[in-house]
Structures are given as structure tokens and as C-alpha cells.
Amino acid sequence: MSQEINLRVWLKIPDAEAATVKNTLVRRMGFADLLADVKKERLFSIKVDSGDLQELAGAFARELVNENKESHKVLIDELKFEEGYVPVKVALKIEDGEAISTKERLRSRLGFKNVVDVKKATIWKLYISGMDPELRAKEIAEGLLINPHKDTYEILGK
Amino acid sequence: MKIAVMQFPGTNCEHETLVAVKAVGMDGEIFRWNRSAGELSSFDGYFIPGGFSYQDRVRAGAIASKEPVMEALREEAARGKPIIGICNGFQILVEAGLLPGTGKIDMALAQNVMVSKGQIVRRGYYCDWINLRHEAPSRRCSGSFLIEKGALMRIPIAHGEGNLVTTTPGMMQKLNDEAQVVFRYCDKNGRVINEFPVNVNGSTESIAGICNPEGNVLGMMPHPERSFFAWQLPAFDPKKQRPDEPGPGRRVFESMKHYIEVSA
Image 1 (cartoon, rainbow over the protein chains, first blue to last red):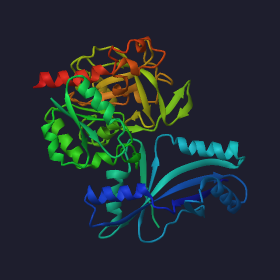
Image 2 (tube, one colour; image 1 turned 90 degrees about the vertical axis):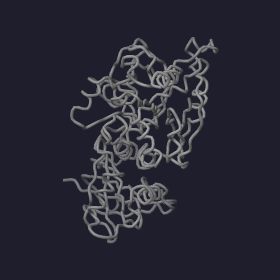
Image 3 (tube, each protein chain N blue to C red; image 1 turned 60 degrees about the vertical axis):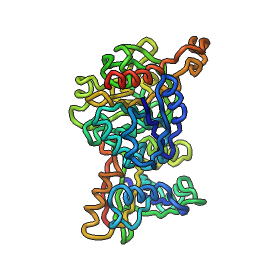
Image 4 (spheres, helix red, strand yellow; image 1 turned 45 degrees about the vertical axis):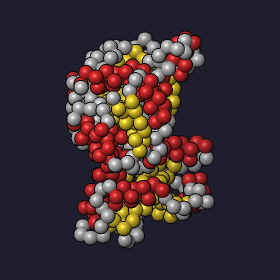
């Protein structure tokens, strides 16, 4: 039976892409009164079929996280987020070449033969005020964060 | 005849495009994204050149498509004025809902996935000289107005997200039935082979360019401004030795000029 290591990775330095998304939502898409901030994380969900999970998570983080500019958090068989924002998970619904390459890199080049699957996604953390923030997050996802012909999204619970 | 060559932060082909516009006898200027959008109405046609607008943040073309100048271009398109989006310009037009022209996002130019013999052989950014076959009848589309159906063109591509996909039911049928497919990738003999390296990016039905139902808006992934002069052609092309001759990309710019003349 496989278990899942979730690696949440975010920039310690300013995230220009998140700033651009916030600017566009505020200045071009009418969210000025509702949106306080936008942050972004990368999410690697790595399934393994054996091994010490904490040890593996540390090893994966050393390969996938650049500690000079990024921080990370490991979650085993769960995916939880902090209070204060709506987390929106965006992933490709067409083939994700980067996830496939990451799996190949971990298995073939770095020798982690216990890796059975790798999925990659972007987590947009939307700091929304006012009524029904999840509905607003849905509008933001469909209005900017995804192209429905290639992406899927999911509004994640806490 | 005045043409606006649009420039967003990250556009990188505006100068070559402007040279091509002027070389076929049109007037033109670079129009920055932060100028008053209302000024666009004084132009007769528009190019959205290639590059990486807003560093492809979120996805290629997504941020630029929200700029006020795009709303103004939507109005000019509705008036029948020609708009040609090249590479990132095509991506912006798709994200703005101007192509395929239903007013909403009806397709994506997704990450390249190169397939050969059922295997993925490559992914991501790719640049090369490719062959195009003109699929639409001449006079169907502003950017290929003077190009005969079936004509072949050698033009370069350079992109990471040109893989046309759609989940809209019936969209591919509509594009084909209504002659909105303007260019397909083909081999040097004009055969469309739906796998790499002829289909350079995995695009559905090897589509390289489409127009809107009215034909005035064209989006194409290849770069005609980079094969405008024969001297720009690759070393293996014998036409390169005849530098005074026009390159194949020139026909796209001449087409827009002629389209404006007959539409006036």
C-alpha cells in the first residue's frame, strides 16, 4: 500500500508571479475591495510504496527545494492549510510533463525506486474578506487562475 | 494606413514586426500597453507580436489578456479591423476570447508535448524551422488574404506553449467546417503528419493558426516576421543566397495590407 508525502514549497524572496496575479485581480478584475493578498506555493505529492516516510521526505526536500530562496513544509498522508486564506489548488488536466520528469529524476537518476507516482500543483492562497470567500475564490480561479481546457482547480478545505 | 504593433511587458518581437509592417508600405508604430486604450481606434490594423508578456506568469497570455487595451482591441475587431497575433500574440488572443471568436475561452495553447510512434519524445520549449500548409481559401482571412489554399511556407517557430487543445464539444468540427483553420504544420512536401517532428508541439490536428468566423482576426504560432526577408532563411535554404528576394513570411504582412485596402 502506498503512502503520500506532500511537500509544500514557497519562496522566501518576493514572489513576482503572485504579485502580478494580485495586481491583475485588484486593478483589472474588480477585486480591490475584497482581496487583501495573494500568495503562492508549489505542491509536490509523492507516492511511495516503502521506506521511512520522514527520512524520504527530507531527502526529497533536499532535491526539490532550493533552500537559498525557498522554504517548505512536509505533510504525510494529509494536506492541511492555515487559517486566513482560501487555498485553491490548480493542476494540469492534460499530461504534466514536469511531474513526469520529477518522477523520472527521483526514480532513475537519484535511485528512489520506492517512488510510484509524483503529482505537481500550484496552491494559490487567496486572502479574501467579505461574504462567501469560497465563492469569490471560485470566481478568481475561473476568471484568471485556470484555462478550463487544460487546467483543473479545487478549493481546498482547512 | 496605420498599424499598431502592440507591446506588453515582455514582448520581444515588436521591432522586427514593425520593420515588416513598414517594408510592405504600411505606416506603423509600437503601441505600449499602458497608453490610453482609446487611441487604438485611430489605427487601421493591429499586430500582437511574440515574446513572453508578463513573463508568462500564470500561463502564457493570461495576464496581458486582462489589460484595457485588449478590451479596446475587442471593439476594433468587432468593427472588422484586422488583428494578427503571432506566437505569444496568438496566446493572448485565445485568453482574451478573440479566438476562436466566441467571446469566451474556448481553447488553450497548452504546454508542448512532442509525440512520435506513440511515445512522448520531448516536452516544453522548442525552436526550429518548420513547414506550414495554408489550409483556408485565399481571401478567407486577413493575414493570409493573398495566400493560395495549399501553399507551403517555411517559417520558424519558438515557443513552449503552442499545443492547441479544446474540450468544447464540436469545436474542432466547427473550425474545420467553417475554414477557420488557416495553417497546419506539414512536411516539406505538404503532407500533414500528426506526430513529431512534423507536428512540432502536439497541437490537435497539427493546427498552427486559426482565424475567427469573420476572418479578420488571425492567430498563428510561427513567426512570419522572422522569415520576412530571404536573408533570414536558414543556411540550408537555397533562397538564402538571393538576399534581395522576399521571404515567405512577407505574404502575411502583404495580406493584411491588401485586406485593409479592399475593406476600406
